[in-house]
Image 1: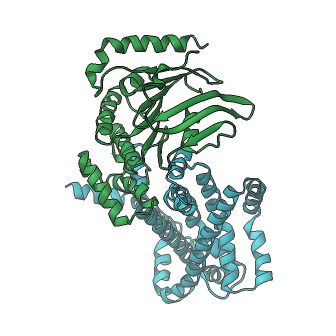
Image 2: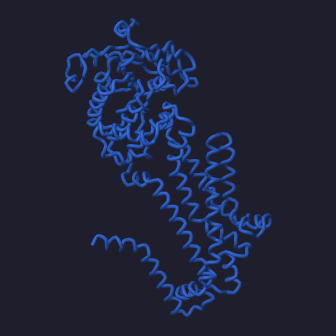
Image 3: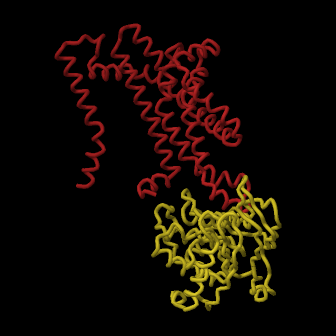
Length: 254
Length: 258
């Protein structure tokens, strides 16, 4: 396998997470095999692969939720925000208390936390929903709330596990564009796990393509479509070239 | 207009009850059924008012036993569920014992408890606790099993303490289950107290029942039944309202269908 050429491009950037020779087994089943991956500061990295490969496991290892057992995972960052797949808002808390929660957990005064959450909601024109419970919000709204709760922590690194999976097609695209906007405002490092190739291309700087179990990294691809991305990016000729390439890479992994 | 309709609607459940009472009264009059066999509803209500002061003296004791037993059962039931959830092997050992404790007829256990602990108020509270704690323990345990692991993961990445995880995730997501057990328990805590008193006590609705039976005063027996039902409904309703106030999101979820 060829060495990714983009290492030069990222050479002078800070590495937030450095994974070296990572193997991970769940009981007798080998889930991850020989993973080498660096997460660079301020990049948007997507991990694409078939359902049930070790994508989520890899993300949880990055988040520190799973002990990596073997291999070396070096974290140069303490504060990591993680949004699990069903990482919806807590249904027993109103939108604003959901947003205030991370701040309160981190030791902020309750009043201050709520004020910050309120400002955050105002920034996104969601303040009129602050006292709504999640069950009163639409699917897209819930997901936006969940994103904001992940962002409000101020963590440099955001780990997202298929955040658009539970949203319908139309809202999914809207939410993706909304996320682009959100990241333009709050510059963050993002690792996104998805099985939607189009989504990965639209959002990412780099895409890591993984094989089925035991999952290896097949290839890492640079997305050279100019930023900021928008709906126009979808019709960029490079978009379909990349899409085809990724499908081919995934197809060859059987 | 709309308001009037809602009043009519809130009266609907009582409509059938009134009708049945009326039929009952009619049957007693038509067939001249003697009072010691079956009293007329009107006689029962008359007795209720005449004996009101005495009845309240007995009721207060029964209510104290019921509510104290229910509260202890709740604390105990939730505690058992927490332990069963925290120590899985112990949980597997405890579960059958819980089921057995519920399958043993209370009517057989109660006399033993009275023999061991006497005729005071304490043993009755104990009986109510035994009767009530099973549904609370079981449904709390189910609730603990269904806690969303993703929610806990979010808290863990925030470096939350164990207490914070309990306070913000475990407790609120289990409370609806605790309450559904509590509602079942609330509906028969008074019954537990009455059974306890029946077997021996100096005050309480159970005692009043035994005395009424001894004197062939079926009307008084019915008064006691009426009060037992009434108090059961009241306690159930209080728990129900409490759960709506404390857990507003549960009702919203049902209305919106998730």
